[in-house]
Amino acid sequence: MNLPLHERIRQDFETRILSGALAPGARLPTEQALMAHYDCARMTVNKALTALATAGLVDRRKKAGTFVARPRVHAMAMDIPDLGAQVAERGQAYRFDLGQRRELTGAQARLEWKVDRAVPLLELEGVHFADGTPFAWEHRFVNVAAVPEISDADFTGASPGAWLLEHVPWTEADAHITATGASAAQARSLAVEVGAPCLCVERKTWRGAEPITYVRQLFVAGAYELTAHFGPGARREG
Amino acid sequence: MNLPLHERIRQDFETRILSGALAPGARLPTEQALMAHYDCARMTVNKALTALATAGLVDRRKKAGTFVARPRVHAMAMDIPDLGAQVAERGQAYRFDLGQRRELTGAQARLEWKVDRAVPLLELEGVHFADGTPFAWEHRFVNVAAVPEISDADFTGASPGAWLLEHVPWTEADAHITATGASAAQARSLAVEVGAPCLCVERKTWRGAEPITYVRQLFVAGAYELTAHFGPGARREG
DNA sequence: TTTGCTATTTTGTCTATACATTAAAAACGA
DNA sequence: TCGTTTTTAATGTATAGACAAAATAGCAAA
Image (tube, rainbow over all chains, first blue to last red; front, top):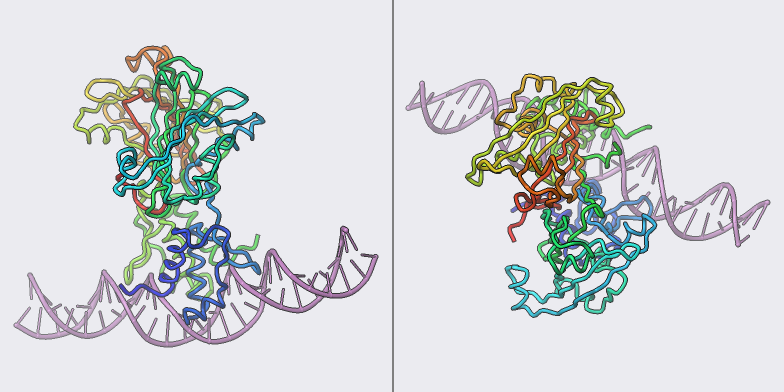
């Protein structure tokens, strides 16, 4: 494959960014440095970096330079919600209660998540509260190999979702959304009646080819609403 | 606002494409013609057209030229589902029963849809069946000014959603997804008990700045599932 | 300390040109 | 007429250079 040079440069950095080798906030070389390194004209480097910028992978600022973009959920079609921040935004007190925390070996993990590779997993289960009232229950698996720092994280207060958003940029996500009635255990956790309507969101996220987390969240009907916007522009008001 | 020239060129054509003035398949002027028209260098024109191409608005072929791309829903993050096609794909018989059909004047329309401009609306209400079993109820408003042909359309059999997908390319959509219990009327239409968990999808779509349709759909829990994929790649299997 | 100016670095835009690549179209030959 | 070859018109890539714009950093004055 003889790719054009600007495309090769683009892919070089895309790979490094998606793999995490270039962490969010890291500065890329200047166009001057790159045109020396690749022995080409500035326009060629510029084309590669501009492409990365329009793809949202990097931010470019005059005089400052080019930086790996922090993962912005707004750039994505549907907000991957940080429940705590949203609750706080409405002036309510947020709390996350961790119920269960378990480390799973690779063999178990393969069963639980149905990934092709066997990976060590962290299993988390807990409930989100707004002003002391439970509004969401979640059950999550995290690929420890992808995020080793998570072993030291403490989720009594901040939710695992918020922690992951902060620490791991994801690049791809799959979501399944259904309605369901609360099971007995879920109903107990959420303080609703068995069979009460709930919004169920199942989501898997990846960074490049590496699976990050799988989560199943149950929201009490009326307490939560997913919104999504598709298309080039920003979200509309009407 | 003094936009850069390549951006102005890009917007010129984006506007014409989204407004429908340049229909899918139409050929754009060659770079030569454009550099004469805008009195600039070829690279400037090229940058504008390349941007439109990466945004998926146009296709470019060497020797042939630049053409307005046909709208591809697959490029969008979440499939706007054609319920009939999905049901048929599973080997079930699909049917749509139109319950109510009403023309609304501008004044009423403003109330019903809460758009800033007063537009003539078509109000539709009906139920989707798979193998004779109702699985979704919908209530829809269509901007007749944007799609005048819809007045002649017949929805006994094919759903309004399918008709719109066929006839009107949308460019932007907003969706709100919640869980809710079925109301008395909805429960009767869907043959479930009052309060049964349902997935509720509210969606507005636009073509450019022009509102096309607003729909509220209720899916019986378990009978339907929304899936969404975010990120550059294609939907994953796992 | 704060404010304001100035220099400098880095990206943003644009030009004019050159050659490569591709695929449609035209010319050609059997 | 059909298939093959050649031409040619269009986009794709790349160069070297110029000036513009913006934001940081440093310095000077209030």
